[in-house]
Length: 625
Image (tube, rainbow, N blue to C red; front, side, top):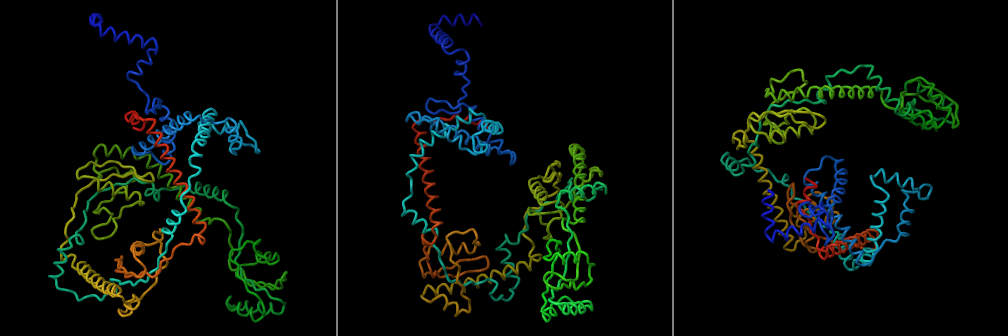
């Protein structure tokens, strides 16, 4: 090797190269030369300014941690987060370079004023340095980082606010858009329902068979799959678990202690009478067995008032004397007369109870919670044994019987329906059923069963036995279905003919009211319709879309989910800005904000083009992959 180097050095070109290399070592140092040769860490450049990958990586990691709270982000999401982190870094650098070019700076006094006025950093209205540092530490930041960011923000506002401050949309533009969006249209409509048409006589089988052959999609069975499934699920295993009564009682006691204190309650029927004689007569009638309805009628004759309280606490009863008497009385016994603040009381307590949760309900909830806890522990203990058995290619119908498995088999389509038309009896919740269906229709016959985790801590394994491809059903088997479909088609055709005749009559100058009256149909008026409203049904929205393309007095005909609708536009109402002043101002503010955003983006795009921004896509990809 050294001999080869000596020979190489005899070449004058090589001598020049090595001389330059030595000069590089002298002026830049060994590490810098090697970095420039093959270890560039700049993920982007703004002109000659480098955006180091570490800056983007830190911002990306912070965004990734936040997104990870909602679940593990996929590749597309991670790529988007990295691109956003790079865009933020580029925007800051572009703005900083423009600030330097224009001599824009952030005065210390302005930074200090913002810092002192931030309520998050104050104690009793005064800036608290300790609180400031603690809050930054909790957010993985430092005072130097925060102040640097704050200075950048102040300088950026000095650059952008004068640029955007004078941006306002033209009043004519706002008026036109407001009139377009807020315009309302009203129409007369006539609904021609398919089902309202008389059913034609049933045709011969030759006609039905032709209909059956011409509409195969309506009479083709879906793809069915024959599957075997085993499920290991805490929710399915829980009802079989035994919970100790002592544990249940302890859980109920904790729930009672954590809730509001229990308060005695009474349901009572009360008569308030002005004098003793009348109250005595009412008491006597009530004690003889008169119903509450009868007592209410008698109370009116004696000038008394009747009231019924349901599950009232003693403090909720308006009279202290009455409250004490009610809570001292026996259930079902007529009591009185009792002298009170408002006269004489005659009453009967109809029920007694306690406020707060029902003890029986608390016991049931505690039992179910304890059963589920035991089931979850059993599933966690059994899942490894189940995994080992499946790894050993044990058939599903030969798995150990002590694992608490639920086994089912049958035939179903992609919607979970059986060939008989009912839902497949897959145990478990909707999320588990959805996961099983997805797996069943992604599997191939002969695939070894794999243990798959599902929602709520459940596991399942599935074996696909056979696939039945879609097939045209036998005519004899679907004869009634073919007849019903043919009849519906004929009724729809009759409804279309009737609606078309009505539409043509209006087109020829007849009013919709007169044409509908002649046809024995009813006319209705729509509510004022907007161009788009989330509350409108699909049929109303379809009609609205057409109405806003018509001139006043013109008619249209649209097909709906139940038939056809013929409509004639009767009124166009333009919105009045004075009447909807708040909405108009909101429009104005939103348009101003949109224009400012557009101008800011255009300004930044211009700076980016001028400063020749370049991005190392390969290095960027290393961040999110």
